[in-house]
Length: 105
Ligand SMILES: [Zn+2]
Image (cartoon, rainbow, N blue to C red):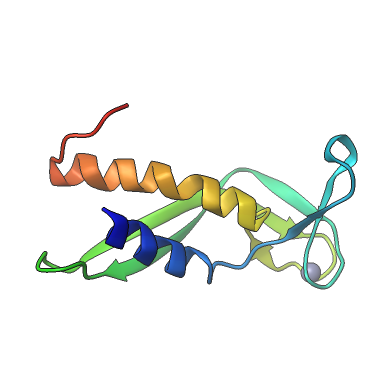
């Protein structure tokens, strides 16, 4: 489980993401170019990772995030690294369910 989390976090760190700036209630999310990120309604950004953990068969994990588009350069990305990190435990739960492993919660 720890190895899986480590692998997923390493792959998730490569997903393009904006950065939140400003106080919590006034926070704006911006692209690396400085443009504001806007959520694309009803659209999901999916990143597929090929994983090979210990002696299990290699498999594909798909990290699904809300799609955001930069209002300046048009680059599609996740809202923030924090949002990506928050999605990893849900992905682990989904993978555990798919593999038939018991878990709490
Ligand atoms: Zn941009």
